[in-house]
Image (cartoon, rainbow, N blue to C red; front, side):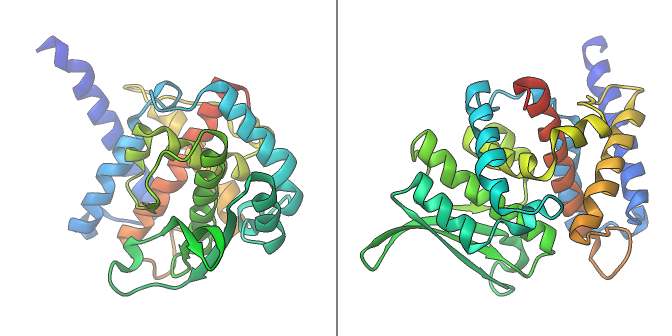
Length: 274
């Protein structure tokens, strides 16, 4: 039917793009099992979504306020090169607690492999510890350091969102790996926006190129920009998805995460000018 042709063409294009990306990270199709197939579904949704037009994208004023916080407050305590890797410094967490209190931020970072294991990247909870009201962040350090830094940035984004907009979410929230689901919730996209803003400067986005939407017959542009983002960001955190002993499912998960934050950063630059 004619009405289905665009969807069919888009599906074919995203499959082609996924094949090229998997080849880049040395994940052959004959090695794909059930776990990898589950991760590929999320990757396809991230690649095909128009991030500049998702309904849950926070308002322009809210994004501009977040950009000011990242630039003027958070970057005071992070190095120009490491960026996300410095988000756990006691100086920064103490400063944010004073700036956005009354809840203090308490970070608990440790490896966690039992129970949910690596499926748990991190979570936050609001709790009374002794006589103090705390915003407790747990990050699973069993993940790659780059993923740990992104998870911490995401949870700090929730802390700031609650201070600026109001604490609407549950007292406890977990970060799971389905990034396409974040496109449906403003607080999740706001939290992810902190990571995107901290990882990519406007100058870096200009260097890589602006937002490239996936269109039938034109996947090369998006492929090249994602590859450029990976080549620029990967060395900062020692992330090499093409070598080493990392399981294929985790290579695809980290690739999805990187594509998500890059596309979101481009959308922030286009939609809010930040």
